[in-house]
Amino acid sequence: MAKSTTSKKERFENIMRPNRHLGYDYFKVGIHICNKGAYKIAEVLFKRAVWLNPFEPKFKIHLARCLYHLNLLEEAHKWIIEALNQDLEDKDAQIVLKWINESIKSNNKLGETK
Image (cartoon, rainbow, N blue to C red; front, side):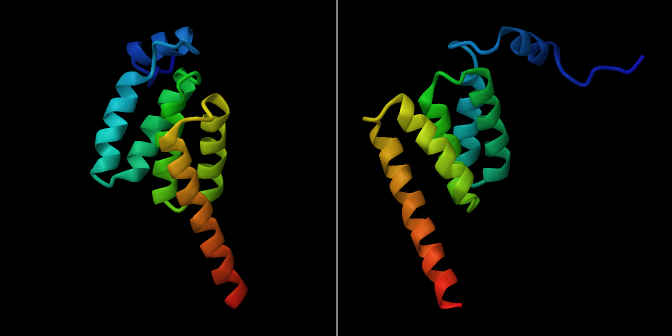
């Protein structure tokens, strides 16, 4: 019989999701890792947090910010719009959306000059 690669904690979370109380541990570590510039690792942590708790818009905001730094602008845009759909007044989400839109515009202008 094949041995499971998921931990007891992960199996518990998978059973309990979606849940408003899950994901904060991944989110906190993701913030730290993102601030260190390890965006690829932080992306995985934020995606796990969102998957466990899709009700928390700040998880999506930080995932979008991370994706922005990885220049994955379309995916970042998708996540920031989801966050804003949950909380239109969130100032952090509005700032990240502005960054993403400016980068998309800039990339489009670069494409036109080639």
